[in-house]
Length: 135
View 1 (cartoon, rainbow, N blue to C red):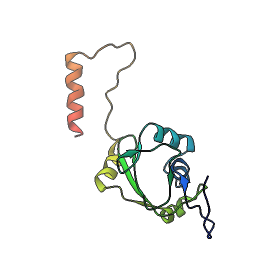
View 2 (spheres, rainbow, N blue to C red):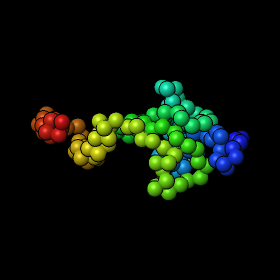
View 3 (cartoon, rainbow, N blue to C red):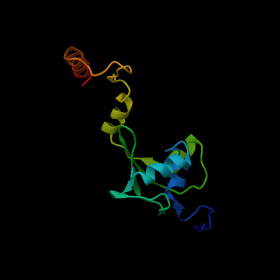
């Protein structure tokens, strides 16, 4: 399993537990699924959820529209409050990725109701026009 040092904090902890504890994922099962899907990496190496981390590693997480980069400062077993997160994790995400995250839901999505079929040439041109406006 893992051993605790004299301060009571673990020396090693599973990556899925740590991701959940520092509030990068809402549930531990979501953290596990992200690891299994290859969305969590250290040095471009995909991690299994059972991989033990010891601190100091730089973790890259591919979320829906952006990549989040963080450094493990300290280990924690149980979920902590949002105020304590900077004690255990340093966010190294580039400003460009943060901007992508903020604007990801502002862009309109080309959506058609069920049963309408394929868009006509005129519909397609309108869709392209609206997409170009938000680039």
